[in-house]
Amino acid sequence: MERAHTIPHRRLDPTAAVVRSAVRAMMPGSSTLPGCGELELDAFVRRLLHEASWPMWLATTASSLAFVLTPPLTVYLPLPSFLLPASLLDRHADRMSGHALYPVRQAAMMVKTVMGMHWGAHPRVREALALPPYPEDPGTWRTH
Image (tube, rainbow, N blue to C red; front, side):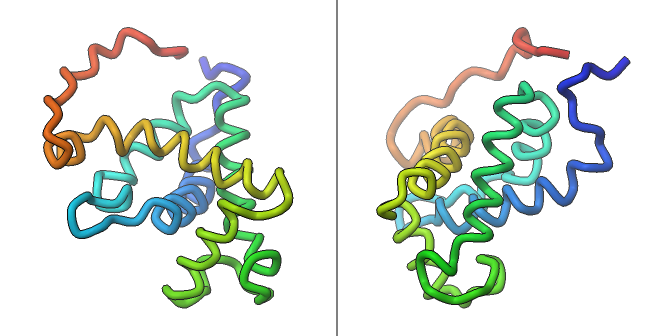
């Protein structure tokens, strides 16, 4: 039986696409470290959206949607972020993180915080930072 806060599977695909779009733009790679989009992001986002509590799901989804919809506030173009060229997308991500309006900055911080869990725990990132890999997830904490 499905718990009340669990999002039905049919709603995961569009939601996951919005989250992935925001994460890829907000957490790109560099010459020495991989970006979030290079680290099995699809599987992590699906798992996160499936296992997250209702408040976490809402915060992650709303923050990612805010990223997609706020280019008019940051780069002054009335387009969703996924239609911006790469240079403007990077500028949008940067300006959103330092925007004068707190809710806009907070949305950027939420995306980075949630996806930072995935990025910082990934074996490729830990290897690049000369850190030992984390042990396999024992799967002991699950809400359903």
